Amino acid sequence: MNLEKYELKGELIPIVTYPDTLLSQVAKDVTEFNKDLQHLVKNMLFTMYQAPGIGLAAPQVGHGIRLFVLDVDFDREEVTTSSGKEEFRFSGFNPKVFINPVITGANGTITYEEGCLSVPGVYEEVKRHQTIHIKYQDLKGNFHEMEADDMLSICIQHENDHLNGIVFIERLSNLKKNFYKKKMLKEKVR
Ligand code: NI
Image 1 (cartoon, rainbow, N blue to C red):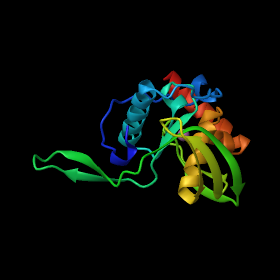
Image 2 (image 1 turned 90 degrees about the vertical axis):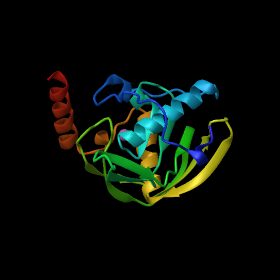
Image 3 (image 1 turned 60 degrees about the vertical axis):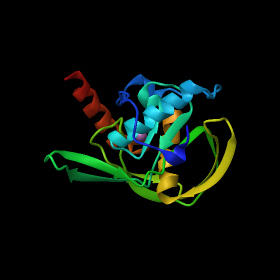
């Protein structure tokens, strides 16, 4: 799978929502870099773009493995087709996949209003590191490292939290955290 030539194709995978227990488990290392993994990544990217979201971690789609995808660069535009139908047009894809990521360094702080596909309708400011250094593997199992800042850094930290069973609202004050937990539970029961 060549991420540089990404096309919007795949199958939608259902996204689990908070407080599903899948979201509070620590994910396991990816050990097999095979076709199944490529297939999962392709469908995760498709699901992420359709949602739309800028990041999606494997535990959010029911896979307890250390993997997430993201794209902080794409554009989504609502267009009216010649037949009068409203649809979304995507452009500027820059999909990235991080497997078995480890944040090995962090600097500075940055606050940004975050949201999460597993916590629909909730947007809250979260404090993160401005710059991070990360080591990770690609779809072939090759090792890489990189420096990330601002949006990319925020998104990586948010997705990496999912691999450790942490949803962003758990980084809020106890008051806010409990408020959202109760709210989400009530919505689930309904
Ligand atoms: Ni999230």
